[in-house]
Amino acid sequence: MIRFDSVTKTYPDGTVAVGGLDMVAPTGKITVLVGPSGCGKTTSLRMINRMIEPTAGRIWADDRDTATMDAAELRRGIGYVIQHAGLFPHRTIAANIATVPLLLGWDKKKARARSLELLERVGLPLSFANRYPSQLSGGQQQRVGVARALAADPPVMLMDEPFSAVDPVVREQLQDEFLRLQSELGKTIIFVTHDIDEAIKLGDQIAVLRVGGKLAQLSDPAHLLAHPVDDFVADFVGRDRGYRGLGFQTVPELSLRSETTIRVGATSEEARAAGADGWALVVDDDGRPLGWIEPQRIEGVVERETLHRGGTVAAVNGTLRAALDAALSSPSRRGVIVDADGVFAGTVLGQQVLAAIENAERPAADAGATDLLGSAT
Ligand SMILES: Nc1ncnc2c1ncn2[C@@H]1O[C@H](COP(=O)(O)OP(=O)(O)OP(=O)(O)O)[C@@H](O)[C@H]1O
Image (cartoon, rainbow, N blue to C red; front, side):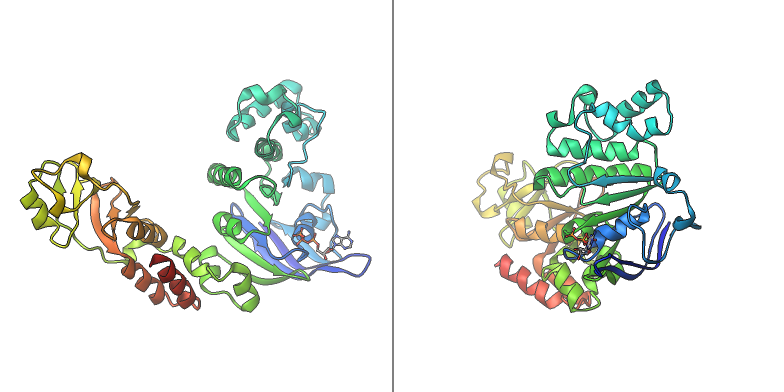
């Protein structure tokens, strides 16, 4: 656990970068610091490993006051990842990753073995070990930066905009792999970003800071989206938070509609009986959805070739966002919901999802729903 206890940082020119910050970053969780430029995110982060010393207040690492610890000892337990990775250009990738283990006095063989293990962990080929940073793409360099920070297995990781300098597609991959890695490693992570979407995707909790380094709100992502404490936070998380919030609500809140399904090979009469309202759902022998047909267009029997396969499928334990996507992308406008085995469970209508949003008692539900209706028609 990292705990900020009334922490203030005033720079020599009088700038108050952080003003009386109280906050806990729980063990094994990702805490994201987010806020506008200059709100003190980086200053807050760097005070944790004492690259910057607070002017007042204390920062605790579990039950130890970091100010009383030897700075080098403190940093050994804290990995640090920055934008552009900050790799040493004249050292190989393996040597970059082994930086901290070698400083700690590991023998070279053990440090190299650890480098190779970490290369694999962050999804890079072992053949990269002897390359130099300039021979890697930006996204690959960031992975090396993460590997380097993990090398001595520190319990705490500080990450300052680690994925901001790469293109959106690579960024998304890095985020996904970071979450996978964290699910295996369970580090205590403090992550700085200015991107609210990144914060929502990665954070177990999100600290929104306002300029002057004041904590505006500390909440889990769903609560932040649903209940911003004031206009500043509401503006920062954005007007489309109603739609973002759908990513956190699960389908069981919706009652599923039943459908009479048919199989490939069904006669046109059977198809018409099943899809009296213009569309019928075709499933395979195990009950998994294959696609929709328009019974009135069937002559003879239902064939695979005549299926409309468009439309995403959402899971019973999935999110409202997935359910809405399923409804909007379905040719029948009925979103197909499946169980954990992929077997058809029922359908939902777009209106049901929108009603669920309105019932969620979110201050912004109206704005979100209006946008959704607008884009649905
Ligand atoms: N060494 C310094 N001397 C004086 N002022 C500083 C110094 N470093 C940072 N500041 C100021 O402190 C405030 C907080 O800066 P900080 O870098 O912590 O913010 P940030 O939220 O990380 O910003 P950004 O998102 O733009 O990186 C800013 O007003 C900045 O100009």
